[in-house]
Image (cartoon, rainbow, N blue to C red):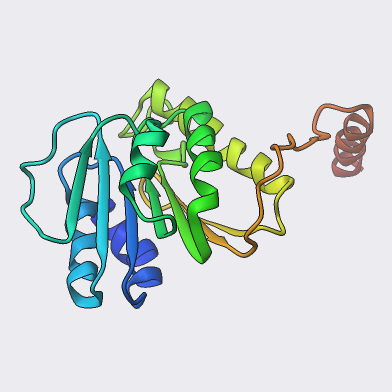
Length: 211
């Protein structure tokens, strides 16, 4: 089992496998690894899976519980016209750039049911740091920015969803909707790393170590 499958099998699917008559919206199909796992639940629980990708992945599977849309994940009017008004699970695994993920999150949050889940793949920059096995500048920066963006959204919406992370492989964000209200605009977290007070704190720690 590769890291991607391990991540899904241990941190995503155990949370949703007992939902009855589930409706899943999957943004990003690739080789269909997550698609096949979603469909396994659909067969057991009488569910429906709707998948979206800019590449034509329609030949990956032939399943009566699956609907594939060959379009962009931000083709909102089209996608919403083809799926039920409410969904149980949203899985985001397409363009891993903070601004794009933010747009998807705000647009689809309203259609997720109460106690439903949103999963965002690739939120950890750790494996992509310079000199590591997956060394990749693009993935490192984008994943780090996406992670921070999610924290900023939570900073102004902590009453509307629970937030957890897995840092296995490229990471997974796990969101459970707790209030059926529109999201507030994100509020950037104010950090005090670069401040006179922190400068004094660091200086004091150095003095203490020397004494």
